[in-house]
Amino acid sequence: MNAAVGEVVTDTVNKSVITADEPTLLDSQGRGSDLVSNSFGSVPVRGDERSERAALNYFNADFTSKQTVTLTLTTPGGAVVRVTQQRTLTNTASGAPPLSGGLIRGYTFTMDKPRIERIK
Image 1 (cartoon, rainbow, N blue to C red):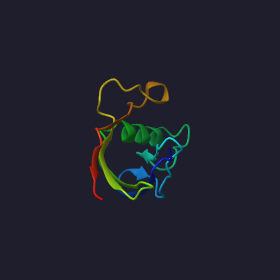
Image 2: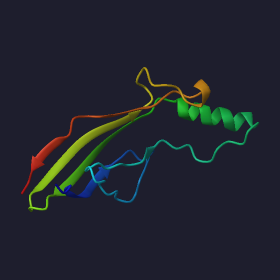
Image 3: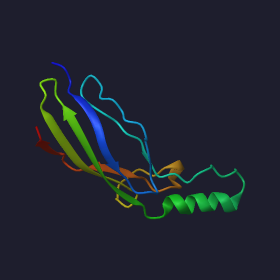
C-alpha cells in the first residue's frame, strides 16, 4: 500500500515562535515532522551574569503558543482529505522535566485529536 501524497497548506504560529519554513515530506509510514522553538537569540557569554540572568528570565517566563496545522492529502485514487489539528507548546504545564540542570522550566508539546474531512 502506498502512503498518501501530502501537501502542507497552512501552519499558523505565534510570532515569538520559530518554526520550519520549508514543507516536510511524509516518510514511508505517512508521518511528518516540524520544528517549533521558543528562541532567545544568541547564547549568553559564560561569566556574564547579567546576560545569563536575562536568558534564564526569558526562558522561565510563562510561555504558551497555540497553533493550527492544516494538511491537505491527495490519495493516489484522487480523493482529497483535509486534516486540521490544534497543537500547544507551553512551559506552564506541570510535570515537564526541567532543562539545563533544573535552571529552566520544562516545556510540553501537546496535540489535540486531528479533525479529518473528505473534501473531494
